[in-house]
Length: 515
Image (cartoon, rainbow, N blue to C red; front, side):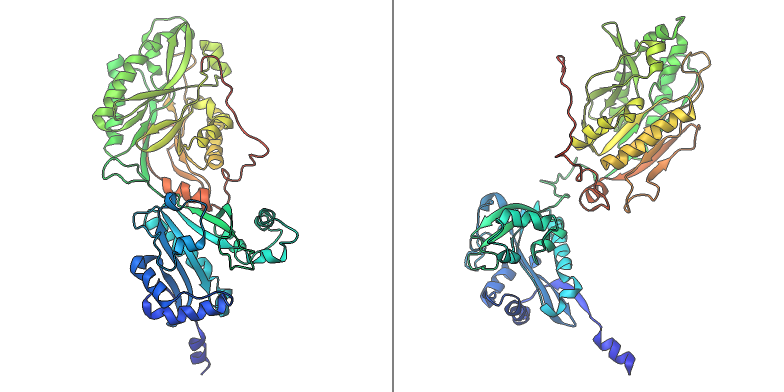
């Protein structure tokens, strides 16, 4: 007997689209919730269903409607920020509805008073967000009542009241809920609903941004949400000529591209074996001799990028001009274009042995897989650089490195992992293994190539997407889901980028005369 009674009292909640037959139950809830305002008429409800049935949703319990959310699609540029509720619903005709619009406009949400302890409003808001995402709409906009304001109107301005609610110094039955659902206040509206005495006719214009919104999806050549990268843990070995080395490079480009990868990265100074071909007596002369190959290697890499349909990060190579030696990484795109990033911070060893100088520009690179950054080895140990790149919307940071010992390698690795967490991005690192007995200052190598992610539930438990066997020649192939970064930015356990105290500190680039 008790088992039967237990089953009869259980809820049976179902989220579904509203139908015209639901009108009476919907009106019943509205009469309870809005005792001082009129409920929707059957004609208005029927018009909504005909225009945009997908946007009218409810939750039922054992067949009875207990919560409702109503919405339409609008062209937000046409209605603008300065509007009233009546201008949106246009006497129940909903003339602002535009099936080609870019914004989901929330008209109403209400829950039967007896069910308010079940957090049904949150379910309805989540369903709205799902509609917005699936219809590829830019945002959700809603005019939000602030019914708690009437108690403070003689003491606080609407702006101050909203600020205190946002800071949780006060609680508003509507605004507090909306803020907890990731909406932000875009504007304060006066006269939005003149009959709303509890809100003193004020309202908040609320907005939720759809981070997945694409302005216009291309049939071909559009930006990918999952990017496949390949990284080469490169074996340093003696070569007989440039052609000999390029044959090894092409082997890896071919191998990685055969897995349909979008980009492949080689290590810092991957072309160091060419130094052994010179007859120079000192390391500084040998590396300048190696720099004479850089332009030809770059041109050959561009040809490989075109031939194998893959973007190539050509590790880094020495560049010598105007009697100055630099370390530069080339991005060779598969469309035939190229760009470059100079190493900005030079290690004491590079200065002592080679007389190398640091560059002075930081670049973000547009590619067909999104915006990427490149920091060469030591540069990843300076967090300001990656932070500036993240402010330019970098999604993947590539770090070609060269290290001789494990402790040197760990500096690069641990800093790279920190950059992934701090900047909510993926970071890929790769170095060289083996030895070059006849090349002073490049004689031994230590590497464990890896791909790192932020640290949150959607990512690997140790924030390591993939990693190579230490000191073994091999490749890594990894798929990186860029949509997970969007989720992290808006709904992560912590939100490093959004929570920065820009009111206290900021970063700025010092402009030089030659910038």
